Image 1 (cartoon, helix red, strand yellow):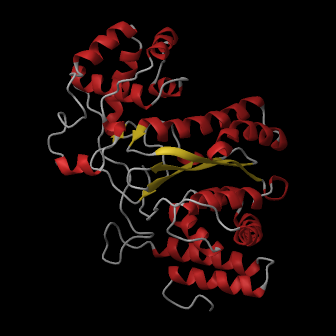
Image 2 (cartoon, helix red, strand yellow):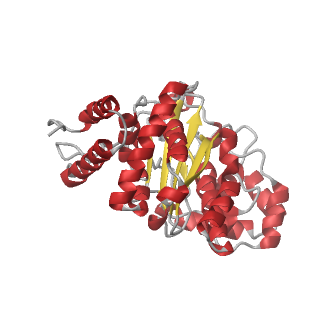
Image 3 (spheres, one colour):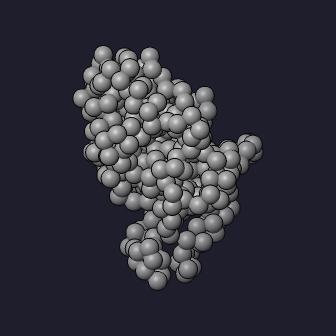
Length: 378
């Protein structure tokens, strides 16, 4: 993974007030206009795929910076603020049921931008696979409930999606950027940010999981009856979790986070595995993208690959604790002053050039002040 980060995202419920949304949409549209005019649509995609820039944007627009609602509200605001005919950027999907509309909306955008059928289908595939990866290939207790797909008129795209964990009321946000995705199953993320780093999380996108991915495909191409015998042979009736395989994990961790996603699967879709067997996938990406392959099947195949063939998947949570631009003491890495100054300057310029009232500009500049120690009004 090229970049990871840390942001507190406690899970909040409810809706943002209408008066705030209207003002956010107005300011966001002007800021998007300035950024696209000055730097281009592709650069806008790069910036929203940076979790810290995105977090700063939410703060500048006036939303509660630490809430999980930053993701859902800011992307919702951008969906109204980014006008395809004006900015060359379209935003598809959203929260809950709106996320299910992403494929249809991408289809409509493809027609609007004049994409070929092949390019439109590739974008729909990117939308589907990014969601499939974060819902099934990475298992840390988070169920996706929000998916937003950004696409530029040149066909480049970005994804911002979020999952929730009801057990500890935390959220986790996933950022993707097309220019950094070589394939969808080998460390494809631009960043993953969250409040909690799990002691145990199945990460089939890690490089360490490469051999496990290959064996998982081989197992799926075997007769489902054979696969069923393997899974039953490694799943004792008394087994409740993976604790037997991971003795180093303290009991307290399991009591504190009793994640069902970490238990041995008990509801594998054997009908789907039969269809996969008949399909004979050529790669892990094809296997994961197959309709009906979910977290339980991914986990079951991974455990068989480990216990029968000795190819262990990565159990390291891909989320990282970090600072926005590094730490002053060099931990986890030195401050990238150039990136920090550039982001601040771009947001500051966008605010100053936005066609909004003086009061709105000053309030936004004051909120931006938290990201820079010196006076930003100079």
